[in-house]
Image 1 (cartoon, rainbow, N blue to C red):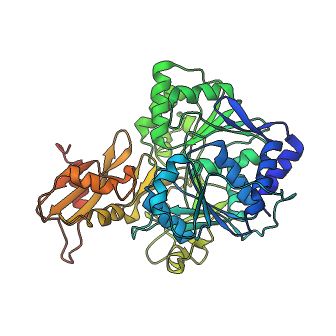
Image 2: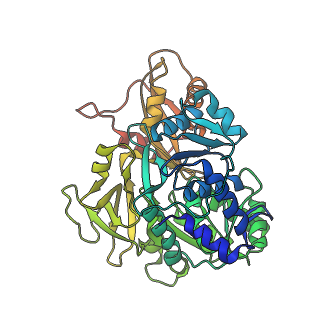
Image 3: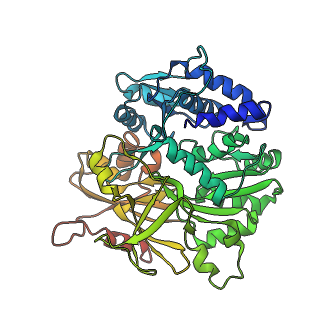
Length: 495
């Protein structure tokens, strides 16, 4: 079935209810949203890929549903990416058009791939009276996630995948009633965009803040304005909201749930957030390949401080969501018993169809029906999953995934850099930040390398600290010992 049937049904039954708001003002009722989607769908062919490279705005949500109404495929692009990076995604996905706002148009224009037109909206036309017919296996959302080779991989999520991801919200986070609200302080290109789906299905209102970036006072004002307000947020955002709430004591009566995920939430931060925000926190663990849907740590578990294993449980990422099956496996593929660490493997209706035009990567990730996540974890006897490490050296900074190799490859294009190794270190504000160990072959300073990165990759991927060294630690095979570099960053006296 086509996801856009949800919008059609909500418009038929709840046409006058608000569907989209910007700040405190309604911009679209359900009848207006369905009309706009049907009209803008006129120029989109079934299966056509349409990029979205813009900040959160009502136009973003309208474009999503217009593409789906036509049976097209959305290619959401992180608005913080460099224009070169966005252009690569558009070229690889084969997107025919990309919808941009003024800021992103200026960023992308010098790098836009041939055959991909930059537009500010899909042109209106003769409205399709009903959504295009789609099968369960037709792609709907082509999400590009970072890859170990320095190039992202296009995660192909089908109509089935997104339908079950929306159902998972109802089953594991909370039900949604008509008029309930979902706030979007986090990018619609990621988890926040996926979480807007159940609100359209059940005629809730999706609220885009008026501020272009997180404004804590505005967030709490919107939570008071819109009924049963919930949102998805990275721990960095949760920590900022908690600090504001502790300092200013805003009313929390209208707040339903803040779902956090995408990066580690340290226990001390969770305790501070719970004290400031009340019983409104839940955690999910997922990946682009199984979006928002691997495990859940519900509100009642986080609030059950009387449980004898409370600290252990809230230090985990929770238990398997009902739409998936989890196993911990060794390198030989055998299932490991509780307590034994191994690779987290998942299967279920929410697991991706594969990587777009990357059959080898798909075969590596999907084996005998299981998604091998690359994350190392262990299950306890009660089914709680604790993540121990992330393979492939992933660093999560401010909720954004950063692969050090991508940064290393960027730095190695600088003529003064002979060798480089990038690792993550704990950061009290961002969860993790990047440190670059550089072996130079000519005079160079940190400012020069920082500028080099800014010209080529997204700002948030830049190293925050630079170490100029004469050599990198290596094993007998010449492989850089990143464990040793990480240990240096944890040593007393490391700045």
